[in-house]
Image 1 (cartoon, rainbow, N blue to C red):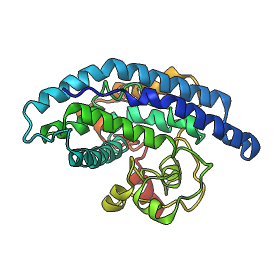
Image 2: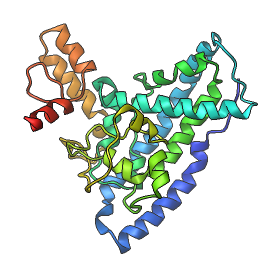
Image 3: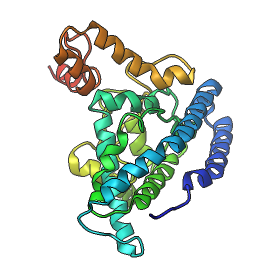
Image 4: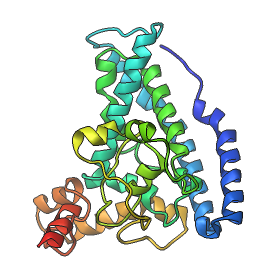
Length: 291
């Protein structure tokens, strides 16, 4: 099996340098860009994600390796074109994993952590889930070893995607050149994704390439400054509460459910769904706005 270095660990010094430059920018130009407690919570969540990721990656590698044994083809990692295909396959998988994380509450309960900051800066990029690997987020990549991608290639491309997405979590960059904005995910596109404004909710799910959003109807350009965070913010800087708050809310919804269909709805319907209409999904809110 192909064994490659954990490039995320090697990227940490670069993350620190870029954050330091952004903090200097904030001190000189945009003083409200950072809040110490918020940034500290994001960094704590990022460190937790790193350690949990190291502990859970072994299972994921074994899972992918088992599927790889039944592969339809072999896409050798010694050929350049296999890496190109792997890049597109990983980015395509990320798009659908990310989009599903906004439309299925089970996956949202992990992903909501990343959207919980009311600030948008490079520290926010580090605000990552502690539960995604445990609750099956990796399943969206399971087709890749089946068609012949070596598990090591998949894990490396996932790391490349995460490293790329670090720099787009900033307000210090307005727009990239037009051709770049058309093809790739940028700070402008991703600010929309982090907006809690109804116009911006559940838009721009791209990892590296924004073309997937353009192709599948989830693209929204940035036309005004977003309001960052959740439609109902957690109002805490405690990383443990941030990491598990949606799972706790889901358990409370289970407790008040009187039917199995309600429990399944709270697990697999979009965030905001309720059996009694007491809370609304994004699509329901949009329909109400149009009436």
